[in-house]
Each structure stands twice: as structure tokens, then as C-alpha cells.
Image (cartoon, rainbow over all chains, first blue to last red; front, side, top):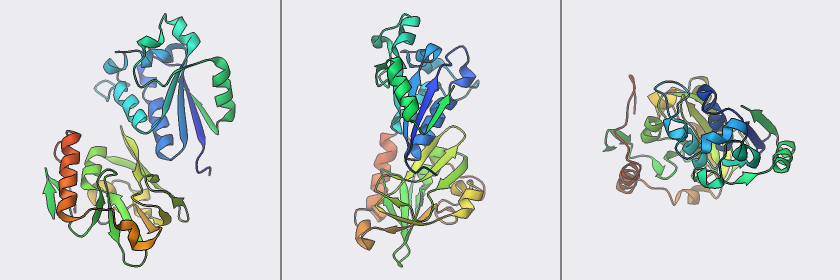
Length: 124
Length: 153
């Protein structure tokens, strides 16, 4: 078993499929809690989860914990979160639209490198 | 035993308030570490507990175990550097033991502190621990501790 590995989670699901939007944060938090380096990269509709005001009103299950709380748990566990620059453009967003938990905007080359360097890659 | 908002803190244990863990000095160069009553209440019904394996060396603040409930997951942080001697197989088999018996059957990891008993000098006990946890609960705006049926704190 790898004691301290790297986990990269690509998130393309967004507010239209809320039931898919808690697990990636949970998995990232688990990985960080196990002392692995965990990074989430948001692409396509995934960037909307980090848009100011979106995750507050979202739950994966009716009456469940909000996605913003899953995001905050992940941040508390030191999970890094970055968004795809092209996906920002897709949704006519700028970095100013993103919540403070976001660690920055990255390009495709960065994402490719991170995926290749990782010990585990998950996609949601 | 100290009690804060229905949360129990046995007097014979040492505590790391920030990490929300207790430590029992076994007197043989090893210590048992577990979640406090406050920590088990925060987690809610625990469904998985995965301690680090025996032989694993950990630094202070690093994860001794990963604990999961339905909505929450987090590490049990080591209050000092040391080497894991054993994990609690009973907690692995049935993690609800952490809710039911946080200070007795629900110990999580047995660890040999680096530097022996000197490693325990920074931990709190008695009134100092109670004051620390009272401040911790106030800061996080925590409600009363919740005890399940059969709780043996």
C-alpha cells in the first residue's frame, strides 16, 4: 500500500446532477485524511460548484448536507481545488466569480501533468 | 470526571484539545489513543475506522487512523511522534464502538511515543483539559454531546 501518494480527482458533474456532487469532495477528504496529497480539478460543469453562491443551496440528497459543507470539510483537510480556464470561459465566468476555497485556475497541460504524476485518478 | 454540556472527560486520561483525542499512558512505553466524547458526537454514527498498521511511524499531527461517518470523514491526529504498535481490531470490525465506548473498548491505536513519557508533557489533564475543551466547544459553537444507547463513557 502506498503510504503517502497523490490523488487527483477530476470533477465534470455540476448542479444539474447534484447526486454526483458530494462524493468527489468526500473522496478527496478521505484521501487527505489518510495523509495523501489530494487535489481536485473542476472541468466543464464542475466549475459551477465553485461559483459563488451555488454550492450553498445544493444537496446530493434531499434534506442532506449541503455541498458547500462538503467543500469546507475538504478544505479543512487540506485538499487543493483548481478550476479549468476553458471551463470558466464556457460558463462566461471569471476568477472573480469563484469562492475563496478555490486555489486557482489552470490549463490543460497542468491537468495532464497532474494526472500522469498521480497514483490514483478519479473522475466524476 | 469532568462534564461539559453533557460531554464526558475522564480524569485519568491525558488530552490534546485541538486534535480532540485522549491518551492513556499504559506505563509500558505505549499509549492508547482514541476520540473524545466530543469528537464522537461531532462525527455522528461512525461507520468505518481504519487505523494505521503496526510498525508505521507517524509525526505529530499526522493521521493515526481515518474515521468515517455517513456525512463526515477525518483523521485521528497523533498527539506526538511515535510508532504504531497496534490498531484496535474491534473498532475496525464494528466502528460504532467509537460511539458506544469512546474511552474504553473504543480505543483506536496503541502507539509507542518517540522519546518515551517526555512526549506526553504537552498534553492536558484535569481542569486544564476541561477548560480547553470548553473553549474549543464555544469557538466551534458545538451543542451538547449525544450518547447512543448503551454508552459506557
